[in-house]
Image 1 (tube, rainbow, N blue to C red):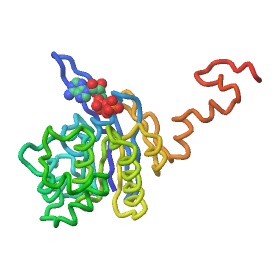
Image 2 (image 1 turned 60 degrees about the horizontal axis):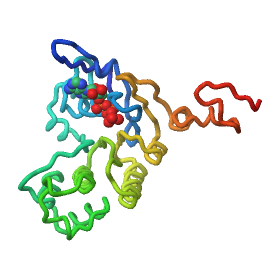
Image 3 (image 1 turned 90 degrees about the vertical axis):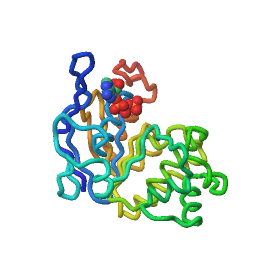
Image 4 (image 1 turned 60 degrees about the vertical axis):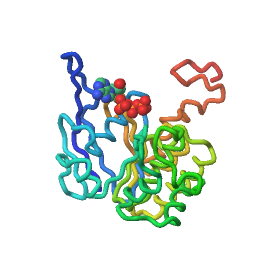
Length: 249
Ligand SMILES: Nc1ncnc2c1ncn2[C@@H]1O[C@H](COP(=O)(O)OP(=O)(O)OP(=O)(O)O)[C@@H](O)[C@H]1O
């Protein structure tokens, strides 16, 4: 179980202090899928980077299975069972996809194992396995390879920052199936940061982050209608949305 208590993150720009995240608290149960969504610039990726120890919080605590991991490095958190796929994956000049997958898995993977991982994210394994994971790969190709690196190892909790970004429809469907499979097995917790309705509707719970704060958190069936305005649009003329007066009533 991941527990986050009163997490805040400030940055200092030209002598001015600005608060990017403010007093964020939530937990993720074992085997749970939490989807984090909300407006652009709300603070979702910043939160993910704090969870993985890439950025350091100004205040607050993070616990993984009861252990305080707040001061642990990225490597220590990875060893403790956390996996992370960036919104914009880094490139690795001089490193083949095969080697990258083995490094991520923590053991030398066979060709079959590499192929199965690449296939699961919709990549033709033979075409990619010996390519370098560098700038010659397209954004969508690199994104899928990065997701495959997270899937290469069993984690207690995986965080995927906008896994849908730049991915074609066919690969996206495969990815959804893969997330559904992980979720069904209940052996790993998932935090998915996403704007995509198909991902949001898979969630057990949804957390909306806006303006650096938790705007709402709750069961998907409670938060989904708020997000997609189903209640407001229940009037046939649809004019109640946005607070306008409905003249049909
Ligand atoms: N180091 C930093 N210095 C200054 N501003 C920052 C810094 N890091 C993040 N921000 C700002 O904090 C806000 C939150 O950024 P973040 O990337 O977390 O948003 P997000 O919710 O992931 O957005 P999106 O949905 O567009 O991916 C943005 O306004 C961003 O410009």
